[in-house]
Image 1 (spheres, rainbow, N blue to C red):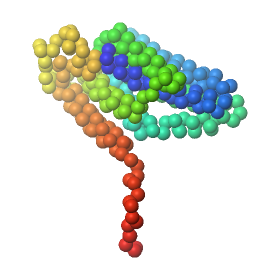
Image 2: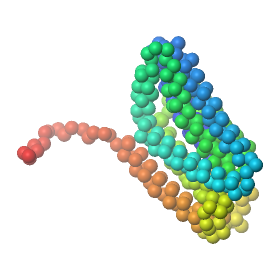
Image 3: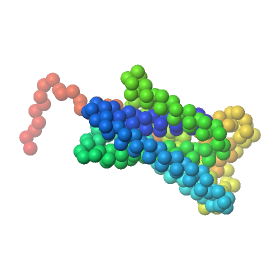
Image 4: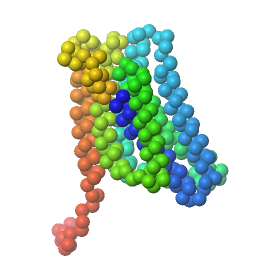
Amino acid sequence: MLANYLIGLREGLEAALIVTILIAYIVKIDRRDLLGRIWLGIGLAVLLALGIGAILTFGTYGLSFEAQEAIGGILSIVATGFVTWMVFWMLRTARDLKGVLHGNIDKHLDGTGWGLVIVAFLAVGREGIETALFIWAAVQATGETTMPILGASLGILTAVGLGWLLYSGMLRINLSKFFTWTGAALIIVAGGVLAYGVHDLQEAGILPGLHNLAFDVSAAIPPDSWYGTLLKGTLNFSPATTWLEAAVWLGYVVPTLTIFIVKSRAGRRPAHKPAPAAPVALPAS
C-alpha cells in the first residue's frame, strides 16, 4: 500500500503541477475563455488513463495461465521503462517545466484555441498512462487489489490537495528536492516490479531458472506475516527469489540509482562559477 501511495502521490503531483501551470498561465494572460479547452484536454487524458487501466485489468480474462503471466511480465518491464524514463525526464525538465508549457500554450493561442486541448491532453495524458501502467504492474506484483488501489487513490487525492494548495498560494514546496527523493524511491520500487515481471516470464516458460533460487527466507519472513506483507507492499520483496530475479534487480537498481544520484547532484551545482576577481591572460593561439 505504501509503495502504491508513493506512486499515486508522485505521479499525481506531477500531473497536478502541470494542470496548475497551464491554468495559472491562461488566467494570467486574461484568456479565461480558453479554460474550457484546457479542462477538456485534461478530462480526455483522465479517461484515457482509466480506459488503459480497465483494458489491463479485464483484457486478460479468459486467457491461459501462461498467456496471462507472459502479458503481465512484458507489461511490468514496459512499466519499469516508462517510470525510469519519466524519473530522469522530470529530473532534467523540472527546472524549466513552466517555460516549456508556456511555450506550448503560446503556439496555440491564435484562432479558436482548440490546439490547447491537445496541449493539455498530451501533457497530462503522459502522466496518466504512466500511472495506470505502473499501478497495474504494482498491483500484479503484490497479488492483492484492495490495499494497493486504496493506497494509490489516497496518493492521488493527496496530490490533488497539494496541487490546489500550490495554485492558491497557500503552500510552497521545494519541488526539486521532492522529485529527487521520490524519484530515488520510485527506482527501488521499479526494481521490484521489474524483478516480478521476470518472475512472471519464468512462470510463463519464456525465461529459464524458475526453480533456481538465490535465497529462500520464507521461514524467517513468511509471505503472510505483517512484515512479509510490508516488505512485499513497499519493495515488492519476494522471500523466495530466483537467481535471475536477483541479478535483474541488482543490474537495474544499482546502476540506475547511481546515475540518478550523480545527475541529481550535478544538477544542483551552479551552471557557471563566479567570475575571477582579475582577468587571466591566455596564451596566444
